[in-house]
Length: 369
Image (cartoon, rainbow, N blue to C red; front, side, top):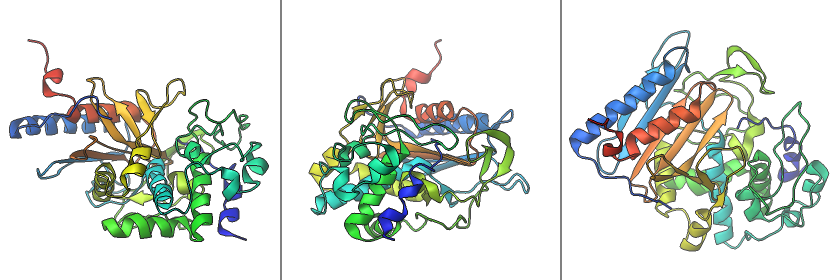
């Protein structure tokens, strides 16, 4: 069985888990100290009163020394603290890596973004999703305008809609994109990510584990309040759960330092030639999709406008037991990475508070006298 065909059955078995308008201002040393204190307060609030087990955040501001903060625990049994060198599952931020590999293949002339899915995966979309692969482009997979729905075990899969009409966030798009990578290269996606991104950038803690259910040491335990079908249940440890279904859409593991290095390289144009860099950061509206508010989606990355008007770039990832957010300014000078080792709480609210604590102008956060 070929590599790309071997993954086709995962398409319907996957679990759904999930340009700068203003420049982030340069901060003085005293402002940085106040900002760090605000970041720590957000972290503390995330675990207070029955919140997630633990949360960490690392901020890199230009040439300043990185700031690292944590709250809660890495392990509910031992109460050990979270640490900067931990490995954790990054969920849907995997899409940024998959999208980068696809764009690199386009740069090398191996494929084009206007190729139809049927050219690379004949019959797959038709057989598994009831759609027409001759009408869906690779670009539409990457910006979630393919019209293909997400697939949720135990629930009826919605019907596809006409390609190109609207944004529908779906892991199916990236599972297909990963299959196309494997068909175009005759190599597993994990090897292409390692060869094209991880090794050149020296991302020693970043990998797509596939069927290996273990997370490399050191790592926090990953906890969930949901079963694999998304139904509520008691808190349980899912660190070694088989999440290979997430694959190209959300299966990767990384570290804070690696995610900073990757995002900065991506934002600064080190991974793609200018024409493909422009493609990656050309966005479509997500309005009306019941997705992350105030966002626009590119090809594996998205922009998010904060309440103060500052726009950040990067992405987030929710997967059973772990939630990650990776964002920075468009120039890649200031980046913030955060991870929770639990999949409950109002994580979007927490991450928004965290990023606004750093990136919104200090004057906008001072109380009126």
